[in-house]
Image 1: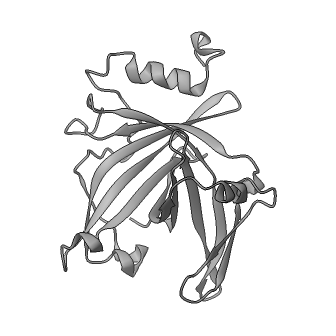
Image 2: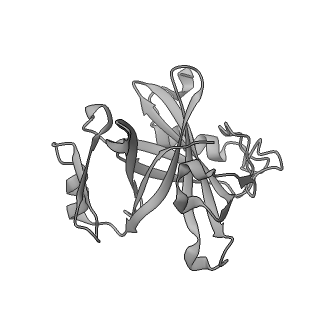
Length: 227
């Protein structure tokens, strides 16, 4: 870590990064897929039939920075908009995130997440996330079946992250424009094993995220991305 940064909070360092250049020339950010806002993204059928018949483009890029053990770790979400090629109706548009997370092998893991729910701040829901059981249950509205998720690696605490919100990029996606803003969020990570047949299972993930300023909750749910 830069000695000049010692004693500063993650958010303070983030604000210096965001405003240190006057936010005129743009800010470099972690863009592992080298995509620009407006880039098309192919989502193969192997990711699920619900994505078929949609054309996806990058609407926004969000770089998350969190501090663990005195070190900063980043991952990037590509916010995708999937337009139905059958109806072109806005009601059939899909909101998807392609999450890219560095791994220990020096490469990265990719998750395809759909917005599962969103709502204003609710104290009782926050209490569920902070429950020491580390368990989160989802009930299917149609069947009433319950699906149980547990915290990844049995963690108890949430993560706090400073988020660089990139609404516009250079043509090659190498840096952001002056439209870049910042968010402070708190999020929790859960997973479960899903039976996919033939004696095999796959991991499904659920990420509740709360905007630290507004209290707005978003829940993102999905699995490994197959490109």
